[in-house]
Image (tube, rainbow over all chains, first blue to last red; front, side, top):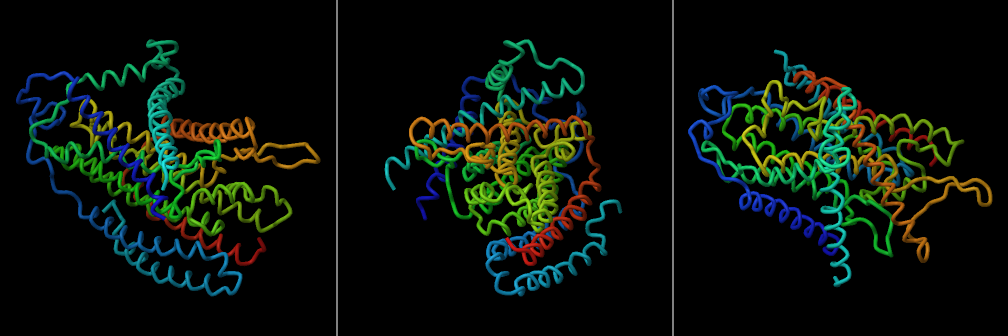
Length: 123
Length: 368
């Protein structure tokens, strides 16, 4: 069990090592120039930056994030169902109808979110 | 746990990252520039070396020697962390993808774990943190907008991505990716399940939802890797580069490395799930017509040639998909943001969901 995951760990270590060494080499051999006020300021197409860098943004982005968590959980529930489906359907069709009813209940929520305009970006 | 296992794993990892992915990323960038030039009737980079083939090496050297500049307004820690976070998941995801059969008795997959596809989703979705942190830590307006857009786009299309693979696992009944390839060798590729069983009506019916599934998955991969027509996070004309506007030198290069590595990993997963993985059906006329499976199990040099042939098949398929990525990029215009979200949440989400029940229904009413 653990033996299967050892290469994953090794791969993560090699990948992080590569990223860190690439950055390090770039610091060591890269040119260093003078710091000036204009160079240090945020890029706004040549204008002097106005206001703060992280401005307020639409509340819809939060809504999308919340809906994502809901529906992603639903998808996670479908994976074990998909894996056992072929064996279970040979015995009875209950496994098909139970998942269909589960999704139908979730779809009520989906339709509600749509009707509320949660995913309508034009308004 | 023995020395042989660790040595071969390390060899596979080093080979995968430094012999396959990094050169493939460099030459994908070169190919992208040449393909775009071809499509737009220009020449593209052709000065460094024969036909411009040394251009990627020149680019890499340039990235290293440029000034590594950190602007004053940024949040230093996250500003440095973001490029690494964009690249590491893209390279790590490929660990579970079988890129060949066996070579000298060693299975050509880095980690053959039983949660295969769940691992792919778990690790590849970490890539969004790199982009969000880059946008937030830069403390500048364009990167911030790019980061916010990107996070909401990536999570939206992850739903379709997750739903589109479920039909595959309804058929295979196992999440391990080597088993998915094994199933496709025995029962025909996922996009053509009728191969080898031509008289079975159920398998012909099955081809319709499987091809739909393939298209939904491929398009969701386009969105996940921020490729045109879904490249709103870095839309040059309106966001001046998006989340990597404030980055320079090697940190900027790591973002691009991550983006192209994610493309390669995405193509590798599409190939594994739908296009038969390392399998290439060869017609054999010895004793009647049948499909010959070439793999690395044959004794002596034929096993070695077979194993290498499988690896070559896999990467040729990946390269063909990468070419398709480029072709689409230089053909289609970018979506508007509300169109993008509507497409993801209304169209693909519903199609993928209905598709699952179509496959489940076919499995219930036809014999397999």
